[in-house]
Image 1 (cartoon, rainbow, N blue to C red):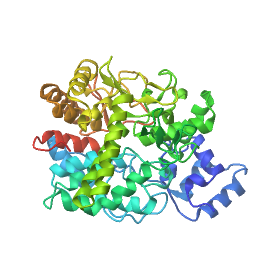
Image 2: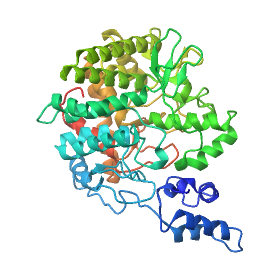
Image 3: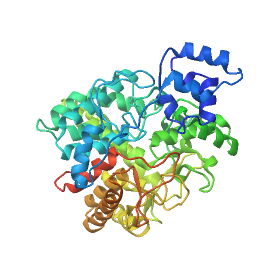
Image 4: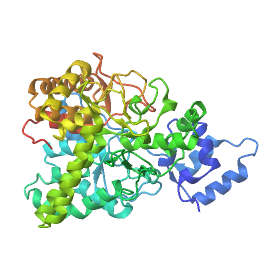
Length: 501
């Protein structure tokens, strides 16, 4: 039975490959005007007819979505802070009633903006940092409850609340969101206890296969067993087909890649789960997108996030009086920390790197993922200072920190900088006493935000941190305005009275 646009077979393939709507995400976001079975039957009956117009057929049978900030005009006489405060309402989506590919959520939530018309997992944490400054505890509560709802309904938090995102998640920031909510008046203990069942389910999702991995089967789903028996994690997707929202791009890349298409598609999807879609971080050859091999890689940032989740679970069980469970998660966290320091720290370059568990060696890509051990306090004092030094010499640019040092045309590479990574590095360096470098990161990044806002009236998804103009490009789609996590980090950096989380 056809129940989603991306399951329409020939019709979906033709619309996407002919780029009828100009953006691969538009068609799967459409709402059909009648049943998909009827639409597909009409298409199959008429597609070979003389004069059949596919563009007209799509317009007659599907309601096209709008960009979420479409029609909004910013008032450049407002300060950037006032602009962001006003945008919260513009970017708020009410409880869902629409059909199509949207997974309905029970509470209001913030969308990033532009083509991103749904909630996104890791974006939302950084958006919440700004909502906290705005004292919008109502929206923070709603968003945590929406994610808890998804954990209960789907078994995990998908990349976003769309059916075509099912099969993958995104960087697991749920435990940090719960901590943000715990900063409200009633305090963390009651919040941790309330969300403990959801935290457990989130952890169980990421650790599926942990008891089955072995010497002969070292990786199952998102779990990897390393040579010494250590258990760490990777990104994954349950599917090995082109992403519906980027069908044309994925299929065309498969024609250029030497990999089997199914393997390539899994690596592309896993990179989408990482949030870094795309970056030479995931490539074997930085000059060749077709060498992407995401599922071979143990990412340092993912494992820092799961270390925090294990610590949070230990804390929650301690509060509930269950000492045995608390001790178990504490042991798991300690084992993960030891493994991350063993496999991801490089004493020669004084930096953290991802680990290729297939090749059994570290990757050599310098990326801002190395700031995550500082943000979470996983690095030693010496390691933290050393990483800060590398960030200062290799990464700090006029507009903030560059994501990587490779210029590839991919959006998660140079010259682009992204709000979430600025925050992670900024707070990480503060945590290790590097106030001067942290302050420069903050000042450079906020100046880039303000420069683009003064020129355009917009806060955008990403910025060119190497140039004076600061307006970014690169990737599968144009730079987007809105923009949820940029707004959140801008407000959070404007506010100097917040804790590490």
